[in-house]
Image 1 (cartoon, rainbow, N blue to C red):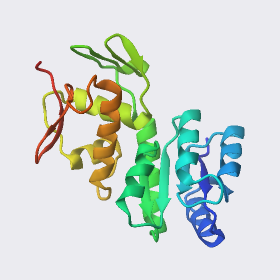
Image 2 (tube, one colour):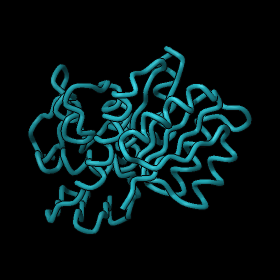
Image 3 (tube, rainbow, N blue to C red):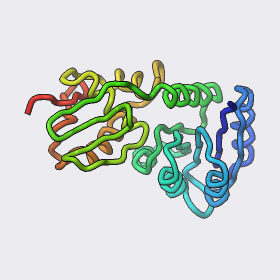
Length: 227
């Protein structure tokens, strides 16, 4: 089955270069130049990965990301020409799994897409977990807190599974980048921090004072088992 990638980029030169790089990997690429066309294309035929430029005419990239995230759990990569870290964090908080800054090496783009595709196929484990009021039914992809089901994105679920599988053990940001994003030589620790923050809003009663997913200063994160 072929891999289908949707690109949303208003700069024709960049859009063409990205498409050529992805097509060289044997992937099918659908190009769109604005958010409205991208949403129509995704609704018509969901993709395996979506690349979204932040600065778009009409609907901006953040809103496109939020709308696609509501439609499905496809891996999303935000692309930005800005160096402002606020845009990076805002893109991740909108539901993106990763981001790239322009200009970027087409080989790095392809490598990240391959990593996201590998991760998408690798999610799944027969183990289930229960920690006080937090219940993880991994083989069904379900998470409950105090008996109430919560929806996690694929990345948030994978992150929680990795922490639960190593409960009580501290995992560094580098460990989590490799285990969750399958990135062994690139990636930004902000990916981990923002996704941990988003995960806490869903599984913690008080995200500002986490009970389960705790920070170990100077080391990383762990899932707490003693209460």
